[in-house]
Structure formats: C-alpha cells, structure tokens
Length: 278
Ligand SMILES: NC(=O)c1ccc[n+]([C@@H]2O[C@H](COP(=O)([O-])OP(=O)(O)OC[C@H]3O[C@@H](n4cnc5c(N)ncnc54)[C@H](OP(=O)(O)O)[C@@H]3O)[C@@H](O)[C@H]2O)c1
Image (cartoon, rainbow, N blue to C red; front, side, top):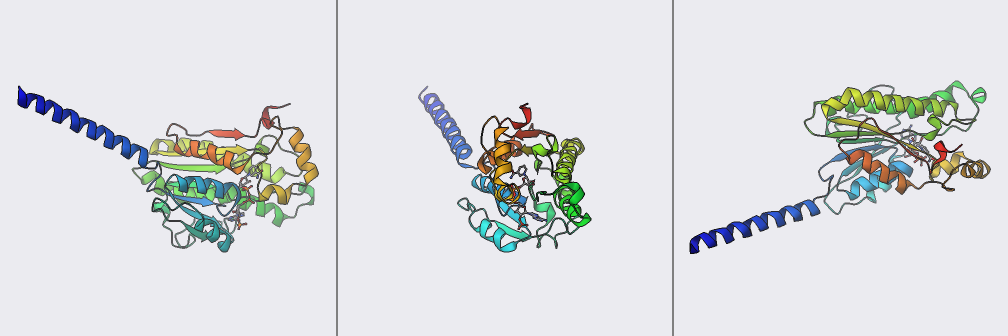
C-alpha cells in the first residue's frame, strides 16, 4: 500500500516534471530555430523587415542584394541572441539569366535553404511608349525573371528534402489595379501571382508551400524614390485607411504565410482597403 502510494506520487511528479519541461521547451524554443532563410532584396525595405522578423524567431538569414556593403551592414544588425548567424551575398538577380549556382550565391549551397523570400524588385516610373528596351528588360529581369530563377534554383532541393519548406513571393496591388506608368511592373507582378499559384500546386505535395503578399503603398525607399509626393497624395486619397502601410505590417503578414503550415497558394492583399474601394 505504502510503496503503491510512493509509486503513484513518483509517477505523478515525473509526469508533472515532463509536462513542465515540455512547456519550458515549447515556450523557449523559437519556431524557426535551426532554419536558414534566403531573402532577395534583403538589404533594406520590405525584404529587410521580413529578415528581421525571421531572425527574431531564431532563423539564420542570408541577405541578397546588388550592393554587398549595404547587405552586410543590414546582416550585422539582425538578432543573434539564439546563436543564429547571418550573412550577406552579392548577386544581381537580373543578370544571371539562368539557375543560380552555389558560386553565384557566394558559396551558399542552395540545398541548405529552408525558406526563400523573393523581395528584390525595382519600380517603373515611365509610360511604356517612352521606355527603351533596356529599361523594359531591367524591370522584367529583376522583378519577374529574378523571382522565377530564384524559385527554380531552390525548388528542386526543397522538393527532395524531408522537412517543410516555404517560398514567399512579393507581388503588388498594381498586379490588378494598374495605373499609368506601371505597365511592365504590373505585368511582372501579375506573372509572379500566376507563378505562385502554379508552383503551389506543383510543390505542395512535396511539403513545399508557395505563397505571396500583394502589398499596397508601403513606406520604403522604393516609394520615396519612385513616387512624387503629389502622386502619393492622390494615391492616399483612394486608400480607406488613409495612410501608407509600414514594413512591419508587411512582415507580420509574411510571418503568417511562412509559418502557417496549411497556407499554400495564397495571395494575401495588404493595402489598407485600396483594392476593394471604388
Ligand atoms: N514599397 C511599396 O510600396 C511596394 C508595394 C508593393 C510591392 N512592393 C514590392 O516589394 C518588394 C520590395 O520593395 P521595397 O519597397 O522594399 O523596395 P526597396 O526598399 O527599393 O528595396 C529593394 C531591394 O531589392 C534589391 N534589389 C533591387 N534590384 C535588385 C537586383 N537586380 N538584384 C538583387 N537585388 C536587387 C535592393 O538592393 P540593391 O539595390 O542593393 O540591389 C533592395 O534590397 C519589391 O518586389 C517591390 O516591387 C513594394
């Protein structure tokens, strides 16, 4: 009887210990600890904000952009409190025009990447009839082909892996609410949405999820460099929220799409109500 009580108490206390230690492990292990993320356009703006959130969740980040020093400075500011390490890679996504190799990626093995965020992009500031073929191609090869080759580079090894992988593409409300002077940019963003949905079906059965965010007007360098304050004011009047979005709001949405394991093929609009207003 006595030994039975002791046994019950011992069993109960070891059960409690296990549950408490499980709770501690769950609470203290960051969701993305041990994951490696590559963020194109990660040196500033939306890409950097998403990288920052990924790092805060424990992931290691590789920031890719054309200007190495800016990407290096950005990488040095990311959270390392959980032992995660970050690096910068210089690559012009518009110039390779083929599948990226480890050499293109500064020695990074494409198979080591768990999460890819395709945020590299350039804006358009001219009417189509005034654009040279070089200007048109720069936008297409950066925004659309850059995203396509990035997906092509990482998709194969992601499909072969036994663990969950995720690709996040960055579209724009201009994919469906195009305005004057955004023809090629809009075509690229429409293409990115088609790519996202088709890839979600091609890769979804292999534990690789592909999603996209469709942001409206977001307060970044791209906005200040490509939209005049007069045009921005006119745009703002058509946004029910009455303001631009922040990179933190975009990165909140990004984390949902990256982490929610049932989310595949989603195009999440984040535009303060712009695209549903008359
Ligand atoms: N801001 C908005 O209102 C808004 C709205 C909707 C969608 N978006 C989309 O969101 C994404 C990020 O935009 P953002 O506003 O954060 O722009 P941003 O502040 O201008 O940042 C663009 C990033 O892309 C990199 N980049 C540009 N061309 C590149 C190339 N050829 N190869 C490699 N990296 C390149 C830039 O670094 P380097 O210049 O050093 O290469 C930078 O890191 C873009 O795809 C954009 O189309 C933005």
